[in-house]
Length: 111
Length: 116
Image (cartoon, rainbow over all chains, first blue to last red; front, top):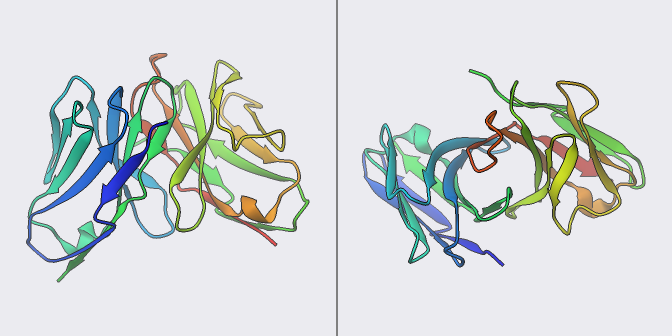
């Protein structure tokens, strides 16, 4: 059974800092991995999707990497801003349609 | 930009009552999903729906749950007899118009269900 773990559970940084969020998964037989952003009481906004054949994806200040063989992904956020404050969720999709989610990392960027 | 919409945003119901949560997926998407998130816990998969039938469901999705696509735009989740433990945020999602499910899933804003 696929398990997804995200470390740290919470992170507080000053504005402008570069930071890395970590995601690990137990079954490396995945088709893709998706990073989401969740604001309090809100839905999930897709940030990046990495196919299993890819090593990384970039969107603006965000860069996600995937090491499928070791069961790890990182989300790098450059020059963090207070508006980046949210919970970041990692989810993997294996041989079926469902996404398996981690519990998320709650990020606070302080002005 | 197209988006998934859900109604209502909040619903309060009494234990044992039936509730129907509604979703309008992105137009021309072919795969539809329901997930839920109990407060403080992970987002959990409930069910996926393709070509007018359930394609996958989780252990959570028991006989109390059902899904339907009553017309060309809506996708509904019905809980027949709600329990206290059904209280959660319910998310609808849809993906792809290419017949390939392994693409980005787009989520709606959620319906917060509270069972008293």
